[in-house]
Image 1 (cartoon, rainbow, N blue to C red):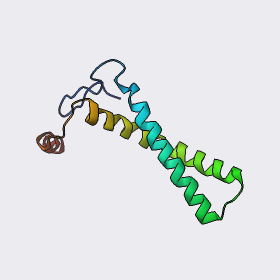
Image 2: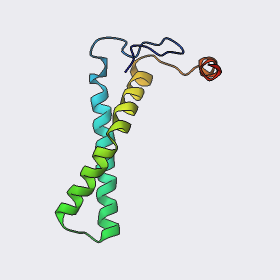
Image 3: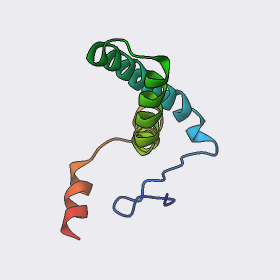
Image 4: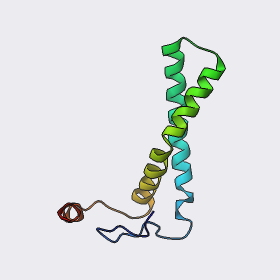
Length: 96
């Protein structure tokens, strides 16, 4: 992960240890995904054996790890880091 945004120069780590809070957001994402996958397996496969639940949740958790990492950090920056979206910088980034 770069130290700052190449377009707007926003620091991606405003203070040391800033992303410890992102672990809580990631935990919420993971818990939500596991509940949804568990419910889908239950209703679509008719309450199969426990190993089917474990495999389905494990596969989805591994595949969604990049999503969890990226979006939990993004939410942490937007909610607690004082970062705001500015269309001016988005247009400047597209012009490059």
